[in-house]
Length: 456
Image (cartoon, rainbow, N blue to C red; front, side):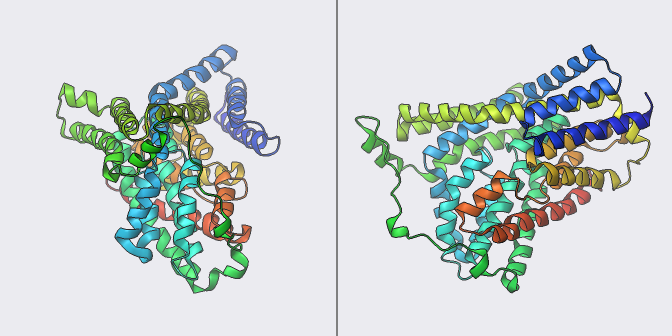
């Protein structure tokens, strides 16, 4: 089949996936598999080879990130019930004060708390953020909502073990330690600069509280947090939980990330040690983190509460695993069609154009589909074969795809509506803080990515 025909069929497959999701409300998992089937058959792979590419692509991704996602989500579920997030935000407020809390909170969300599923993390942190907003003056809601949106969305795609970051690293075969290091290089300045840019704009007349904010509810009549009643000893467990040292609660997660980073450093230094290699492998490192978190949870909230947390985490992880897996289906079929060789004829390795193309493709997909994860996975899968052809470091393609997938979080995004309702914004206000704020971060992130392309 001609190169032109393969390019046309690939474009049709991607367009079909978007239409199925947006127009016909197909589940993204089904839409991605159908698109993969069409591409394989239309590109001349034949029925057997198409099915093989789809199943092997799914299996390859699951082999790389299945356990990582499960361990990360389970760890986050236990931390949630330990009230670790609320206490961390409170500690940040005391440490940096109201003026710097938006930056501190966003950087913490983006770099440190990505083991927790985004919607869960947002639901936990939003009430605390809204309480803080009242202490920041006229533009408090705008500043804190923008910080939450930027921190949460950037963390998904740039920070291990964020769901998007794990998927991008797996699709492009980037070692997680490597992605962890370069992701931090990108995400820290991106979050800091983006919030500063948005704060300048919002406080110079762009934010109008009278039309961009909803009236505050009567907090005096707000219901108190429910008290779990699981039998004898529950009250004592809750009391003890409040006394758990905050650093202790996050120690297992910190140890996991340090172990993964140590493994990456050992690879760079070409230092071989069987013990270090074993404990620094991402699966083992996150498993140790989960075991440590469960042990601490058992000590402070009791075994029944920990088991309940793990059950909830298992339910949350199912959809995430399937969505990431079917991204591998599309990537597997694309690899078999030879798209990488075709695209490689039109770009040179010393050009910035391929990275901008990755960003643009992810941005267009995100505008159409409305999902950061789907757009990042699809764009990375489309251009993954391009990396070996050009000699580009795959981590650059992964980061560029992640940056592009952040562009224009809008009305089709669940995160958009959660931020609107939980932070007391109107739709107009959320378009400013969430859509504009995360779009600024999407563009800013390409600065560090392009800078890295000069040295990586």
